[in-house]
Image (cartoon, rainbow, N blue to C red; front, side):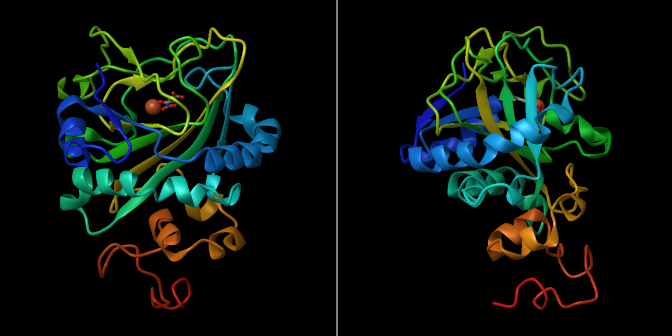
Length: 263
Ligand SMILES: O=C(O)CCC(=O)C(=O)O
Ligand SMILES: [Fe+2]
């Protein structure tokens, strides 16, 4: 089973549970108002670009939107949520100077979609060189998640299977949870979107956080218009990658404390 916690309770257990089991659920960590406003902002984007990412892996009855920082003022609340930050720090903080985003994706699984293949998100990296956790994913339920409507499925313990394990013989469990909750999983944990057997879409926002010295999955510099970056608060800009990693990596001619961080 996926360990399940309530927002504000037993916080000292969360990181250990995540590292032990590979995934945890934290129920109702965001407010209804945040989720409502986020969903309202994203709706036109699903219509506009949602079908562009359809393929064998993502599915053909799933709509996706990336580069979320430019689409909703509510993004920052979810992206820099203290629970996400604390768990990213607990898993990754000892192996990098700063943590950065990997990707920001809204996912709407439409009725009739099949289950996604179970996979580990960190296979985008050559893990044989990186035999430790390099990222976590924080997936927000933007609708109530049920087994019927395609709640993300997770194989507890699969992060211990070894490199490039994509042999999901162990049982997977649905991350059923009320909207506003998050399921957090390690980069090496097998998981995937569930089949949607209901008659309504199932919406999620998944943000990944990685070691700050790794290449970002979603290239924020080319994805986001600079005006959209400029209006973000400093902590969001930094997390999006607009900062150096220590004194010598990802530097640029202007002083890091100049162009983007002048407040
Ligand atoms: O939509 C979901 O529940 C999970 C999607 C996912 O894991 C992915 O696309 O990498
Ligand atoms: Fe995934």
